[in-house]
Image 1 (tube, rainbow, N blue to C red):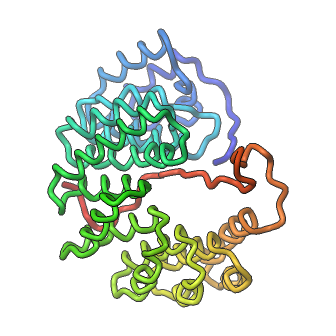
Image 2 (cartoon, one colour):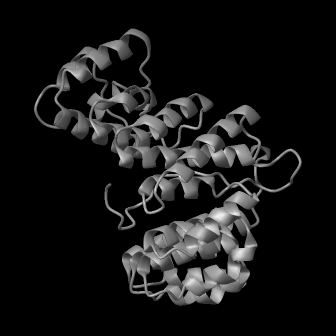
Image 3 (spheres, rainbow, N blue to C red):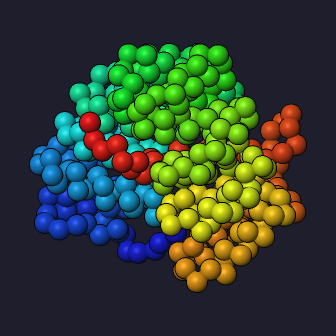
Length: 339
């Protein structure tokens, strides 16, 4: 994100621009940042007077600006549009809330997972609930909330068809939980004949932090499928599999850019001298995108493995090591399409 400065637009003028032709400027949209009370009510009234296509275009613009501009906080708007009549708006609203980890978001996400008429939106809600599963496993949310999220996702997992996007996203979200039921679900998904379900199983293996999956994940780094190689690389990083370093190094020459980038990220997470040398070599790549991603990976490597004086806020009270912060940004399309 970047901090941007520009002239201030009056709220009334910004509100009037919603129904005007064209895209509002960044300064105009910033007038809608952190709304509450009467202003939020006025915004809702103006919003619902727009047609579905206009609302869809605007919510996507708001989502993009929220990612790029630290001065813009549109979470109240995204929460307000979770119940929008158009599924495209609801989907973008869920995606716009990917960094909102307040427990008050749990109930509306569960309601969407249970009742939304769109399976795509249900799946997005399942994916978004994953960060609360993760927080629950770290005891960062009350036990009652943890159980609420687990029950809702397990219900979705057991009641949805295995080949559905809802089932797959629920499996991935629940993977942070370590129990026999989830291990059975992950292995069952991996043994499926459905390629997309097997892909979700690989994602789940990485999130599980169960190193019993290490060897299996390493074998998938050689898959003929670029999507599988990408997810296997990510899983190797999450599992911090030292034995995968050489295989990940080979992926740095993979024809698939996503696999190359995932390998760099995994090497940064795993650490070690060999991993660092591989990342440094990639920094010198003639491929500008590869070199840029390698530089970011090297920064990540130094953050986790370098000699850095971490602030005490990064540490657990009982563990003198930094906590990795989970940001479940919506996943890129894995080829499943919409349902």
